[in-house]
View (cartoon, rainbow, N blue to C red):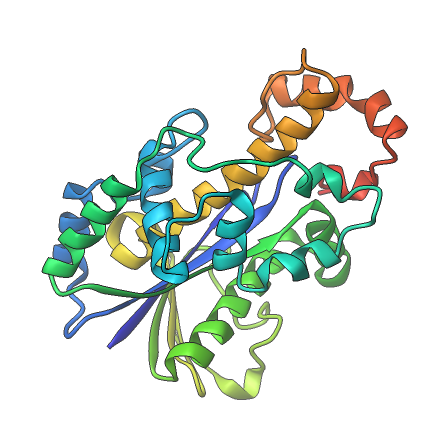
Length: 305
């Protein structure tokens, strides 16, 4: 059976991309608790606990090993990794960019690894899972840059629906690659508990609500399978934990590259996380004149909600 885990990274920040990631595993029988314990022993878990700004070694190691499974080689450059992992591919992502603003997100050459990770450690972690009967079949991220995020809010009215649209995109991708009858387990989207009226692509005629409680919402979706949203699923479900760590790495790479772009023009600038913190606020203020000089589209730099 195929179990697809989906999680998001970067729903709340002020700068940088929103990244939703899906990792599909194949198992004979899905035993969530036993696999979560085995994953924890391999260093795989909720990215809030296993990865973060300034402590990305294991997430990078795992991401490089997952990308190697897609490419057939270890990605040596950020563009190789993004092109392998992004569900739409790097060219489609770049096509959204206004020409004068594109260098902010795409011009800096970044060789991998950048956070001290080592693909050997990632391979060892995946090998431990394989010995437990877990085979990773697919790993993809759906990436909404600041501009796509802002346009999504314009279209759907909230950042939660933008996030949910990325989840749905990943479900369609996995269905096309792996077939129907998936078991899909997702992290909760913000504080949302009832999803029936908020899907952006799954239409009501394909949807049957099975459960909507405080801790879990579960649906049957025609031609897809079962879709569940669970509180703390990244700590209790292996494929969600894998998605969480890979997505965290993809988001941090995006911020790393954006930081490098601005620091090339103004070396005194700090590296920032992009979250709502004093250092990020100072960065936004300090780059205002530079961004005007470089003709950076404001909607490509900062989220509006």
